[in-house]
Image 1 (cartoon, rainbow, N blue to C red):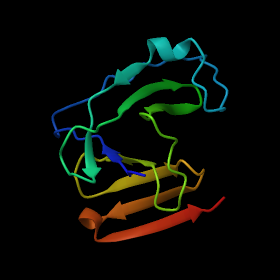
Image 2: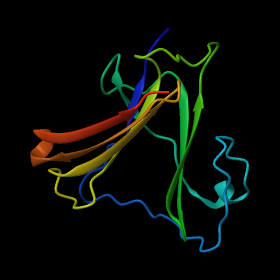
Image 3: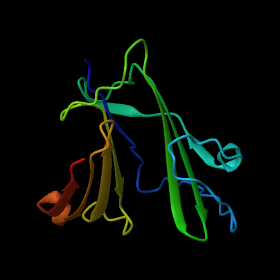
Length: 137
């Protein structure tokens, strides 16, 4: 099975307009069926970091981003072609890095794998120092 890691890359001057829907309610069930996803900011252009860096991925991904009273909501629709998601320890994974200081030195990262494993980390000093936590399921 192929492994693909998808990466958002934006310049420091780029921004994402994240809509705010004060009373938007969602169910955390992985289905993305609520109507609010139709109004969310959608991102469809990504590059991969593995197996071939900086190429367009061979499979499709749509990221949905919005805010509500509870916080920032990110939903991902990952489309695999003619294969099941790779749920091995080294399998399919999404990693999101948030550079809230816009300094490319500090970031918060969270990740989830197709097997349900979750992790997060805090990176400082351009990635030289980090605290990492993972929950194996």
